[in-house]
Length: 76
Image 1 (cartoon, rainbow, N blue to C red):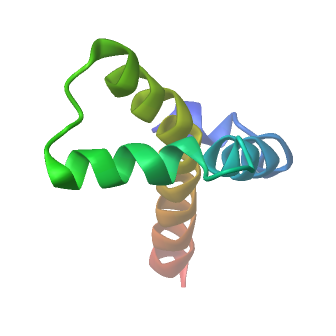
Image 2 (tube, rainbow, N blue to C red; image 1 turned 180 degrees about the vertical axis):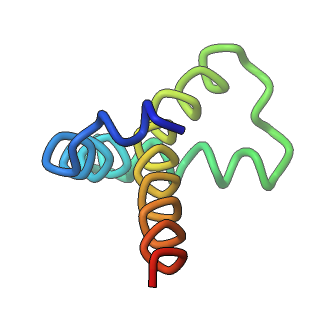
């Protein structure tokens, strides 16, 4: 997972927050698409792409945090 080490937190954190919350009104796309996924109505390709687009930076940030914590715990 060396590619995660190359992504600075200062870049991925604002990007993840912004895309997770965009658009700010009436409700974030990520929240809307997750509700559609749970309801079973996430069937259109554009909606699936939208879920992927808005969730990817957040998932990358979470992976980076997980691997950082694991590597620091292993070095103690």
